[in-house]
Length: 239
Image 1 (tube, helix red, strand yellow):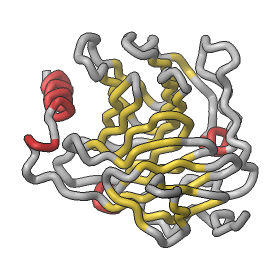
Image 2 (cartoon, rainbow, N blue to C red; image 1 turned 135 degrees about the vertical axis):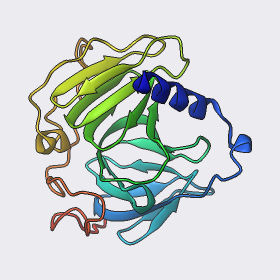
Image 3 (cartoon, rainbow, N blue to C red; image 1 turned 90 degrees about the horizontal axis):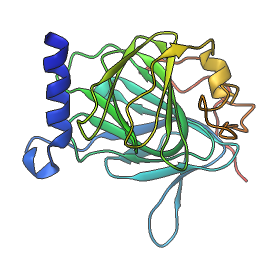
Image 4 (tube, one colour; image 1 turned 180 degrees about the vertical axis):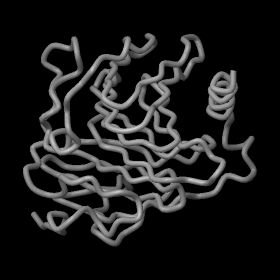
């Protein structure tokens, strides 16, 4: 019953608009690790971000090919490792929403958090809710999503509220198609390092949809929120 109430609360929060959230605050995303190029899409041309720079709620970011970037949200004990060719929006228009991933792949790492906000990540096909976990996320061009949980538990919530939520536990993965319920979770044997290096395979059942990060350098460990960058491999690189 308690879990049902939690999920119902998350759905209600997700349905709320920014105008209904007078306490909404702008979130800050620190660039703490970088291999290759990270761009903020602004007019008249994209702006390149470097280690030490900050992005904020509402910014639309993308990584170039053979690139990898670490974004830390200190206020919510969250770290996102964006893989090659990833597009995302730093969310601000829903309570607890940290990131909307349009395309690409990432690894999300959540530390201990005493705040009341639900920490949410969305894709075109799902809402992902956590309380403290680590997972990999892959989003195809058509919006199909693959979730691979390394630690903890993730509740996969249908953004329309039509289908019941599915709980995916450590060592499990699932696939979510747009407007469809998540597939029954199955076992995986992928390490966070392999995921970062693009060795996680493709979305189960989706022929030809494998991802390849193209990044063989950079950060491949498992830094937690509050770390000083992503390790010695994360650096500024021109070109």
